[in-house]
Image (cartoon, rainbow, N blue to C red; front, side):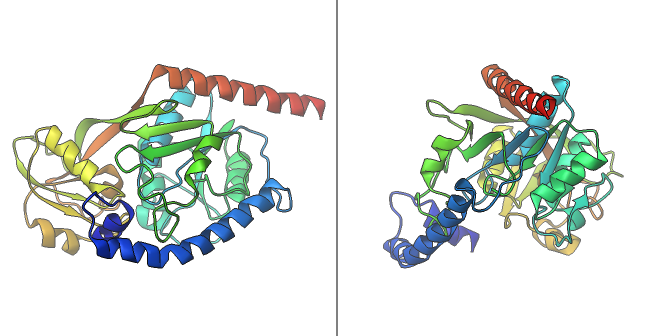
Length: 341
C-alpha cells in the first residue's frame, strides 16, 4: 500500500498512466478536502473560532505534507538550542496512534504503546517536560501548570489553529518536497503550497532553495535497542535494516553511505507497531539495524544484536541567531503585556 501511495504522490517522469488516471479520479475528493480545511482556517482568521493565546512563546514545528520530513530531530534540536540559551522548553504533541482521554504526561518510563513513538523518543533523548493530547491548548496549559517551562514547542501542530502560535517552522523533505502538489487524497498535501510563504522559517531536510534553511541529519553512533545489551556494533557485520518511518529509503541510504554491510532492507508503514515475531520473520537471527523512532517500540523484546542509529540535526548558525532574535522579540512582547495587566 505504501509503495502505491508513493508512486501516486511522488511520481517519476516515467510514471505509469494508470497512476495519473487514479490521481484525477481522486481530485474531486481533494477539492472537498480543500473546501473543508480552507473554511476551518478562515473561521480562525476572522475570529469566528477563537485561537487561544498562551502566556509563554509558542513555536510550532510542522509540515504541510503527510509523512516524515524530519520534524522529530528538529524538535530535539530546538530543545537543546533553547536550553543552551538559558530557556526552559516544554513540548506538546498529539501522541499519534494512541487513544488518550484528555491529556497525558509523557514520563520517561512510558513506552511508545502508551504515548506514541515520537513522544517516547523525544523524552527518552532529552528528558524534556512533555504533554500529549488531541487538544494541544489543554496539553499546553497542563505543561505550564505542572512544570517550570517558559517556552513551548508544538510538535506537528501547524494545522492545529486553535492554539495561537508566535513562530512557525515548516519542515520539508528535500527529496520529495511537495510531491505532485495536490491535496489529500490525490496528493500528499495537508495545505496548499502557498502556506510556505506565511511561515517564519522553512527548514529543508536535504538541499534547500533560496530563503530556506538546510538541515542535515548526521549519524552519531550505533546504540543497542535493548537496555540489557552491552554488545558493540561492528560496521563490517552483515545486517538487516528495517524502518517504519515516513521515508525509509533515506535511512537505508544513510546506512549505505556509512559503509554498513546491509544484506537486506525492509520498509514498514510509518508509525508501525512492532512485535518480536514480526521482526524475526524478516530478519531471522541476523544483526538488525533500525531507526531511533522504531527502537523505542522494541526495547522490551529486543535481541542483544539489535541496534539503532542515532542521528543529530545540524543547522547553520544563522538559523540559530535568527530564531533566537525572533524568540527574544516574542518574550519582550509577552512580558510587556503582563506588565500592562
